[in-house]
Length: 271
Image 1: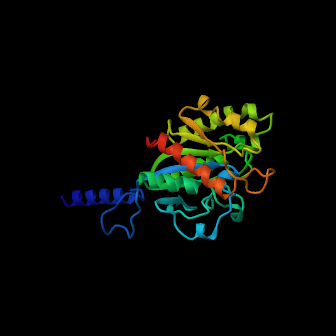
Image 2: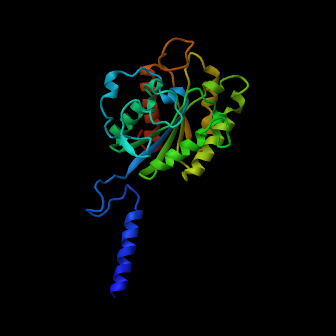
Image 3: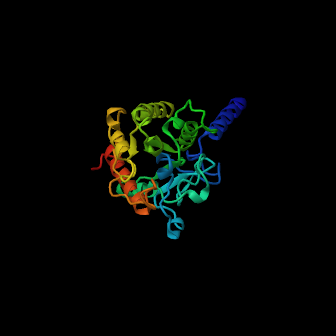
């Protein structure tokens, strides 16, 4: 009987050791408890998703209420701007400024009371073809990194939507006809590899002062990708002038709120 009791204790101990970090363990088994139950969002694309709108000093001083950010160790930490700082494929830190993720997450949390965990993994200047699984453009592969980091976050909650903002680098007349085919392939692969076959896929329009024809393409997304939609960039301000494709601070905040409106409708059923 003593031997049987020892075996049972060993099995229980092994199970406790194997528990994921977000599962509460019995008192005394660990020093700190990491909570689960986050609503996970993957934010990917190029520079306007990475964030180029000017950050104010005040934006960087406080945690964003109800929002967490997946850090470079694959753990949730209280979110604080700039949100693309832990992107495993980003450009220099100083280029990471105000992104749509800030107003998006703030509005969704305020409307739902849910805890949000953001996986912000964008890089400026990228083409949609560079985001496909088979791309050999960059090492590490942009797609593989998005999947890897999303899976890290999904240990702590459920993936609720994928937010995509990209297209400036594909806006030429030779690339536009291929764009939706490539984007549909990206969405299909992400859903498959993240085991989220019907997760909403939401794309953002580009600067109205430069990308009229490309925005027409983006608006057709629901005809190519199931359970998808786009958000308008109408009224988003310029960072510099008409030669620059980036939104200013207010434009980033505006399009982030529009992402939130779309998610509130598609994910939470809030009109």
